[in-house]
Length: 257
Image (cartoon, rainbow, N blue to C red; front, side, top):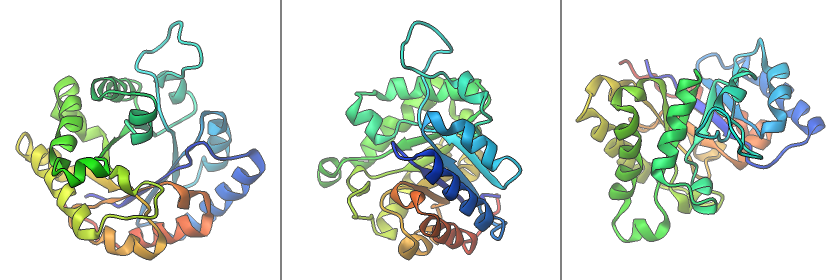
C-alpha cells in the first residue's frame, strides 16, 4: 500500500535548543497519527541529535544531500556511508537548490541516488521545472530528463526503493503553490512514464509534492490520486504547522497496490 509520507526539509536552519523543542513536539504529535509516515531531513551537524531524540519514535530522519563517492580527498563533503552511521532512513538528492545554486547535473544527481541506495538508505529524488520552463510548455520534458537520468544509470527497478518528490521550482519558498490539478497532472505524467517501463514499480512508488505546502492546502493536495504526501520546507520548522500537514496526510486515502 502507498502510505502517505510527509518529509520535512530543514534546509540550512536549526540550533541545538530549538531543535530539541521541535523534535520533542513532533515525536509527541506523531504518536497520535499512526496512519501517516513522517520524516525530517536535517543539516549534517544535527543528525546525531535527531538520532538521539527520534530513536524509538515513529519519525524517521535523514540528510539533505550526499556525495556520490564513498570516500576520498573531497574536503567538506559527506558520503552516504557516513550518513548511514547516523541511522538515516532518507537522503534528499537533486533538490532544485542543489541543481541551480551548485550546478548539479541530472547525471550527477543520478550518481548520488545510486550511492544512497548502495549505502542502504532511501533516496528522495527531487524533480521539477522553473517558471520559465513551465510557461514555455517544457514541464514534461524537463521532468522526464531528470527522471530518465536515474533510470538510465540505476534501472527502473531502483525506484522500488526510492521516493520521488515533484517540486515546481517556481513554488518553492515563494508562497505560490501549484493548484491540486496542476500538481496531479505532473504526478500522473511521472507515474505514467514509469508505468510504461514497469507498471508494478509505478503503482507502488510514492510521489510527494513540494512547494509551499501548508496545513491549509495539504488536504486538498494529498487528496489527488497520484500525490502521496509532501516534501515540506519552511513549515517543517514549526511543530504545529508541520503536524497540521501530517494530520492532513493521516486523513488521506491509502492506495492499495
